Length: 176
Image (cartoon, rainbow, N blue to C red; front, side):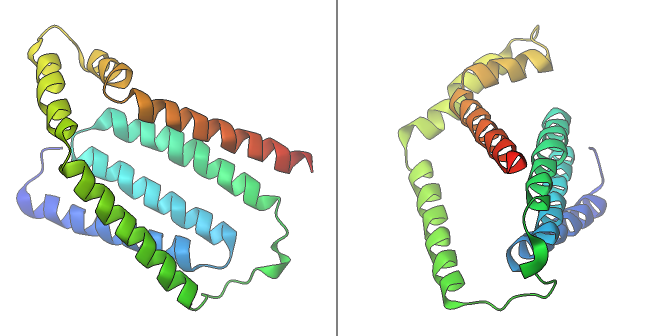
């Protein structure tokens, strides 16, 4: 979207706040239904970030797949759980939560540093993308298809496996 500077900055801050509050809701709520709705808020905010970045196709895919399918599947699975032991209060931060957050943060930082220091990182973003974008006859949907079948083939296949495992889990829970 072509927005002026202050409006764009306001939307970034607003969406970032929604993203942070939704993430905190996922972690801090004891009730799994509230956690699932907070996850839905996070996914919608990510989709709106994509719209701000002029990636309408990715934003619509985010809304359809993650908000429309995965989050509904999570809510469906949570509905089958016994909800009597859950209350609506916020739980306190424990030592285990602190250790887990430190481990996850260190893994994130190390993955970012490793990715930025590898030789293939610069090659993927310069050679293949420039070759594809230089061709004027290729439409946007064809570019997305080319990227999905070359650069992003492994993540695309991993997402399909995750969806398959989630579907099998939902069927197993529904049978019981």
